[in-house]
Length: 87
Image 1 (spheres, rainbow, N blue to C red):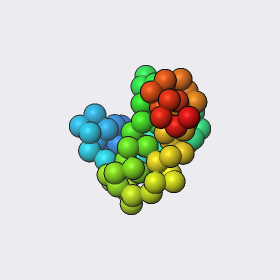
Image 2: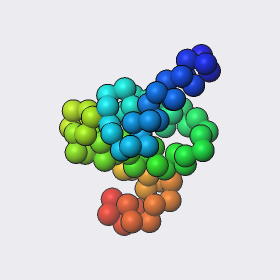
Image 3: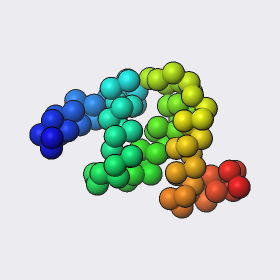
Image 4: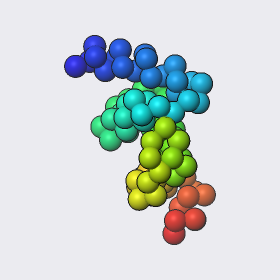
């Protein structure tokens, strides 16, 4: 499992670094965020990328409920701006 996850990460982080969202990248980011897998990138970055991808339909179908879920997770992680906006 670790090897396949590692290979998947190598392939998708190229797109992540370039700012290109693909369905595969979004699924990988979602897997990492949902399982809170430690990486050199803070989990809050994963939450932000997922929220904005679903909010804007970037690489996935637009889904405001899914976007809100990740914005909420980001706020719960200490993002003061989102805590204020989301209440």
